[in-house]
Amino acid sequence: MFWRYIPNILCIIRILCAPSLFLSILSESSLSLPIIFLAALTDFLDGYTARKFKVESKVGAILDPLADKIFCNTALWSIYLLEHRSVSLFLVAILLSARDLALLCGGLLIVSKQFKNKDLKPIFMSKICTAMVFTLCGLAVMDIETKDLILEILSFLCLFGIITSFYLYVIRFTKKSDTTFQ
Image 1 (spheres, rainbow, N blue to C red):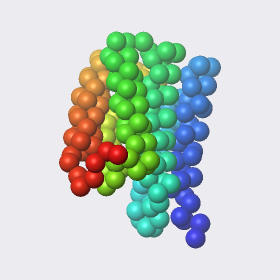
Image 2 (spheres, helix red, strand yellow):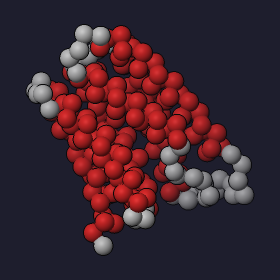
Image 3 (cartoon, helix red, strand yellow):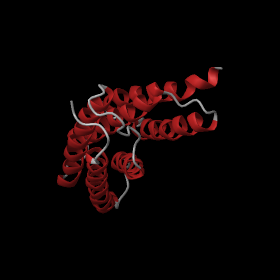
């Protein structure tokens, strides 16, 4: 019985990781990397436990991508503004925020029943993109010599993932269906 709440609890933990990461970066604490790791772990475990114990829910279907959006956007902007300013990181943050805002608006249209029979599930490329953003954030807060070059490469991979996933969402959303916008 308790298992059915675990995925949503993990999503809430991920949401709480966002302000924790911001404060950690602001105070120059060494907790930034563990917070990013915890957020990434909850992202994996919430989906795994929901499928494993067959406790997927409508709340979870909304809460999981919302938690990802809150954490990833907060993490990227916190890292960019407070720790590592680079053009590529700025581009990733701006494009991710724009894509996620568009997806939230599209999701609200779907939930409001303006567009019936539209799929709310994340596409696989979006999941890969989220994993790359977690990796990018983790790398950005680490203190290693080759960080700048690796960050640039990973930033461009993230940009490719963000643009590709947004394109695939647009294709999915604009597919003709039996219903029309009312």
